[in-house]
Image (cartoon, rainbow over all chains, first blue to last red; front, side):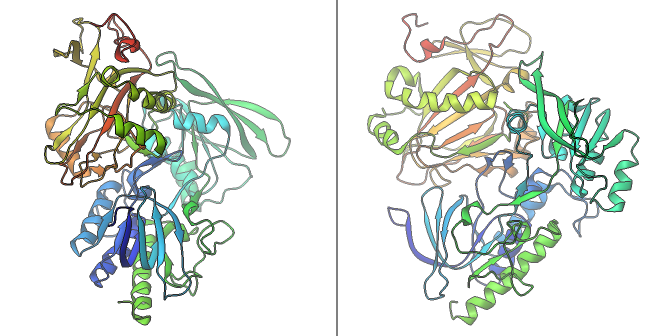
Length: 340
Length: 228
């Protein structure tokens, strides 16, 4: 590395991201002698927690990943993923990619700039940066979310906190995630209101039955949350949620619903901010648009895997599969262009 | 410390590069145990205080007061690794025997004691970097898991288990690492020819309570004539 952080070396393959997709890509690529450099990020609040290892780092029990009959903690699973990839030679860089300059011609390498000022040049790049939870966008919602005021996008992370125990809480959303959050919270809260803007749910029937069958879960149909109201917590003096303001989507009438917690479960946004102006093509929802049923993007030598390119499944196991595809596609592409 | 926040994270460009350049030029030599009372010995350190306090205000959801500051370095050829631990000790004005506080010690003219977990949960540490820090020159390693940092004091055995989950917190000069005192953390040796200087500042929003008081901030900053 030179003094200005410019590395003259051209990496065969750089993998950005460190969830199941990133580590699986690293595993396959390292076994293929591509010596992948994995840029795994650093912990940050954006506004919710973002950790190397991705969303599974915020998951207590993973029970649907094959090979773990008793389940496994998300962080432990990601540690095993990393160890397995490193065993075959994957290298790790704890940094964030800040900007990219992709070269559509394979004769020139792609150039990545990191947040700490390093420049990485690479023949091939796999983007596996995942996705983060969406928020409603209300001022009080984000303020209380980032200050421990009882607003969260992760019931599994926060649902067991004392502030929610034996108190009424609300979940916003109508998909499987909202049902999962509601089901989890029903173990702790006295009442779980599931607020949905329509009169029917997108969630799978199984998830609906499982959650709505709980005696303390109640649907609030045709309603949106338009404000979050707070109060001073007498013990800590901090601002905490006291109610949400609901607007009926049919009558436009507003009312307050008193709750001690608000869990936002309205989907995710792919982590693609650093790809602005990169020339990559995205779908309407902002996910990387993959070509030919594989991991290839519209830019030669740039591949994508996992939640950053998958709005539909968003599972650890599908992300891992996509990571495998991306590594195999990258290996094939590098060989085809005599770059390995 | 926000219950929602993870136990440790990096904020970029908290102090501008011009200021960092100036600070690096004027920074005094740092003894092995760290430079206590850095604001008294080095008035330029004040340039880092308000950016750090601004972060602490946001984390604590209140106006934060500085309770202690230490300037650390891991100079080339003369450094060490730090085993995994939590920052459980606070500095206060005077010794008051209270349940949950202690054991007590006196360091550099200030009373220190181990604080109860309820107090530590309401504190935050902001570490502003004067040099780029990475694994090679001994950057902070932390176990920032959301469910691990805010719960309790950990036994030596539990801390050792956390060592498997340490994540490097690389930061460049001008960045800040934000951390709950209860986040298990460690750091390695500096194997480079670079320094690893960082101003470590601890903030709290409220007095420790039960008659205990933080040192006056003016005193910590060397702006008071009543030094103890």
